[in-house]
Length: 161
Image 1 (cartoon, rainbow, N blue to C red):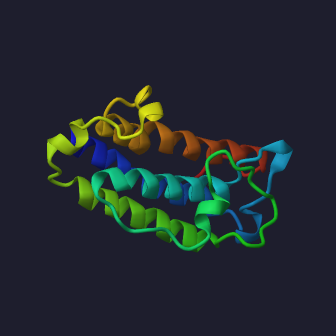
Image 2: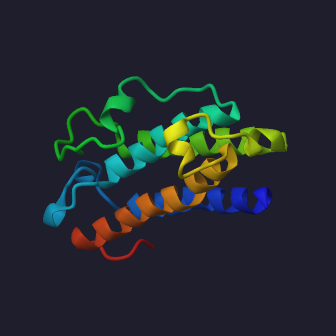
């Protein structure tokens, strides 16, 4: 089953690229019609979430300095483009974290995924590390990529090509 999850997870790199490919860099933080989660924040949040959860599967790499505060869960994304990384930086880091997850999960000892989630509060939703990892690779990532798709419509761009 892990092979299938990794395949889908890898496809999401090209989906993310297609979703933002035609968005001018200076529009990546626009908040049309009150949509708060702009493409920059959505991609940055996915990157930071993957780095955080990746620690449970042995990923020790960290994201660029300052990104944790910019893209923290529960934060309010700013529409001010200043201080945010460029679209190219985001896409490169998105691909990098996917590669790290792919490498970490190739041949992972099943006991790592079967282990009880280390955070007691989170354990109520994700009893095991594997449950959290599967969620992060599928539902969480596609939820935020879907937000970018909705943002495109609100911005008048139509579907990604």
